Image 1 (cartoon, rainbow, N blue to C red):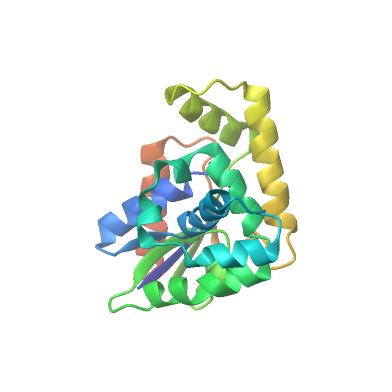
Image 2: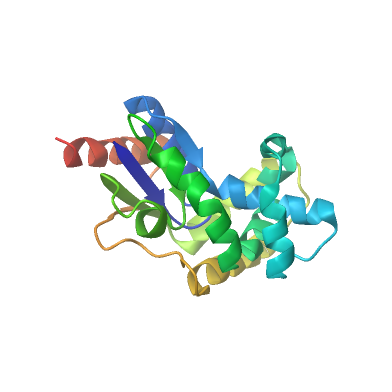
Length: 206
């Protein structure tokens, strides 16, 4: 069983995906982490994330880079969004994601183009979303918990910019697949959102 989970930043898709994988006994891949690793490698190389050639060169990052805590930072997310606009980067990472999805028994993958590009044949597709304000509040609280010195207004602008880059890029933009179930988590707490997602998958695969 292949479960594709897409959605914008801070929508809750990462948490939901991990819990779906645990509940159904499937391996999980946060595909956004691959793009964060590319962005981080570009940074380590001292090159330009807005240059397709530089970004593609960074797709050969070592697996050990996936453990770098900087990948989870807001800066890491911004770099990921910048390198992900390059078709060459997406092509380089496509097979890696596809192979993970097609392993025996299936898998859960979350990202921004799983249901539309990576796994258009997924058994279940979820598009997890939430209002801009709700997502900003979540990211702001997360960053405050990490002790980061940032204002809510700065976080709002960061989230808005990421949305624009992800939704407006020409190659594999962030969009719900036509047959995806839309899960709006704006008014849901963590437990309720996870329960709703599990119910969707259970119902769809009966």
